[in-house]
Length: 439
Image (cartoon, rainbow, N blue to C red):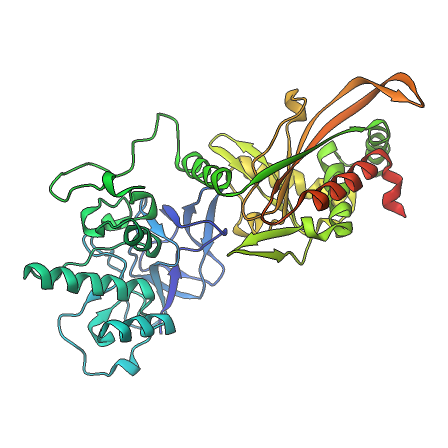
């Protein structure tokens, strides 16, 4: 039985992925774990590995296609079995198509998800009349078939499938729009969530031909930047942000950095020290190491800290996993590796998954302080400004000391002011007295 190659969901809010190139061609033999296709998400460009060994065939997504996550884009056949290595024509959508004749098998023999069966039962749909590229029927396939039948019953025309992602269908239904009247920008014209107008008045008339439902991007604005903008807009407009600001004395942090570099010989940076300190503070205040998912607070089991890294196409957040268990030298090595591969566009899926807290350091750009936007679904992000000599009070007397301003941006749905303030206090204490990490 063939194995499905699907468009993976590499992050919580990802809806689609863009196929950049096929590393292997239809008919090629592949080994499990071998890279076969390169895709692009809003955060990274990654190479997807073969889920099984065999022969690559039935490639249904071409370079440049934007495919909803979970969609089968190819099959891997067992060696010696009959394969289909012909690329699917552009007119054939990746979602379900109606069979030309009902197969002899019963609906019980059809492979379908429990939700797909429930929806089919509610609408009186015979599952034997549906076929998918993967051989398994999902919820979206049944909904697409139901919509097709409604359209053919209303005008007597032959059934025509309107491919659309599940979220696009839900948004269209909520806004009173007809999916068939929208112009899709997905593979084979599939309607994606971004193609659904925000209001009923902005509905695209079926009789009007438009080149694309999505406005053309400005020159130089790529997919990564566009989707990053969409995600940050969603975070800013849905997460109730509040900010906690603290100026900390970093004279001992500076001394710690010098000693750590001499003792380890590693290229340790202030960001590495902050990862170490933040990990310790998160252990003391685990509520900050949480996420807001599906209307509930979800506690993260591990201390995984993301680092905001600027690249040419936008911003990515690779993750230092289990930072609380790493030495300074190990943190520095992982940070250096992640940053170099991020800038080269070579991050792996695991490099951007599992983050529970993020640090964004703009101190190297001379920024004194700033407010960062929470990286969903995380509860908080730490914004770090530059180290500068400032006049502070020492034992009631003015003195010039190196200080740094840190700002904790919080999602009030997952974190309240008191818990956030306690975390900032613990973080500041550790920065001002790093020896406390040894206690």
